[in-house]
Image (tube, rainbow, N blue to C red; front, side, top):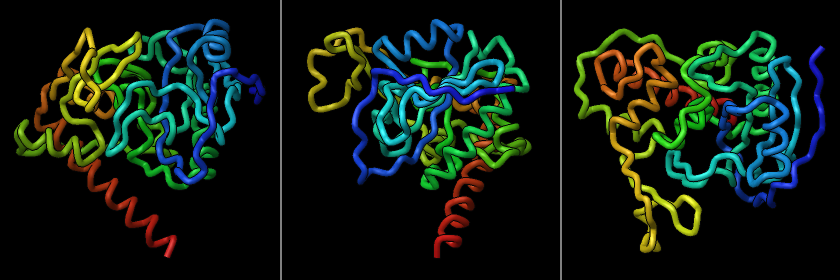
Amino acid sequence: MARFIELPSKNHAARDPAIAVDTLVLHHTAQPLDVSLELLRFGTVSAHYVVDVNGDIYRLVEEARVAWHAGLSWWRDARSLNATSIGVEIVNIDGNRHAYPAVQRQAVIALCRDIIKRHPTIQPRNVVGHSDIAPLRKDDPGTLFFWPELAAAGIGLWSDAPPAAVTESDAAALLRRFGYPPPHRYGRRNGRFEFADEPAAGGITDVIDVSLADIITAFQRHYRPARVDGVADAQTVARLQDLLRQADSAVIDVAARSA
C-alpha cells in the first residue's frame, strides 16, 4: 500500500502570503529514488513532493514555503516561477524513454487533485511540465508522460483536435497567448542561469538562443508527443487553438462559480 512520508528538505524559503500559488510544475527526477531524495534534501535544489514508482509520496517542503525546483523559468507573464508554484518530482530516469507505472500515475493524480483543491488559483493551463516553462533547457517529464490521463481526471488540459488550415506565423502568437514564453536568450552569471534580455544582462556568458522551433517542440512534447519536431504543422496548431478555447472556458467557469 502506498504511503505518505514526511521527509523534510533543507532547501526552502519563505513564501509571500500576498502572492497566490497559481502554477503546478511536474518533473521527472532523472535519478533513482535514493539519489533524488539525497539531492532534493541536501543538495542545492528541492521540490514540494516526490512520487516514487510504487506510489509512495514524500513531502519534502511544505506548500506554504518556496521549493527550488523551477529554476530559470517563464510562463505567461511570470518569470522565475518558484515563488508562485508547487513542484512535484516523479521518479523516472527518463520520461522520454520509460513509461510511468499505473500505481505511480494514480498517486500523482490524487496528489495533484489535492494540491489544486488547496490552491484553486491554479488554472488548468497552468498545470505544466518543466519543459513547458524552460524550453530547450529542460525536457521533462517527457513524451511518455500521462497528460491525457491527468486531463481526464480534471487536472490540466488535453486536445485531440483535427488539423486546421493555419500557418506557422499563427503559432508564435497562439503559443504566447496560451502561456509559453516568446523566443529569448539566457546564459550564465556567476554559475547561475539568467535571462539575457534583463537590464542587468551585461556580463552573462555562454548565451543560448531559444527559438520559436524550440518552443514549438516544448508544446509538442506536452500536447503532441507522437510528433516532436519543432514544426507548427496543421495538427499542432489545431490542438493549440483548441487548448486556448478550453483554457478561456475554464477561466469563465471559475469566475461564474465564484460569483
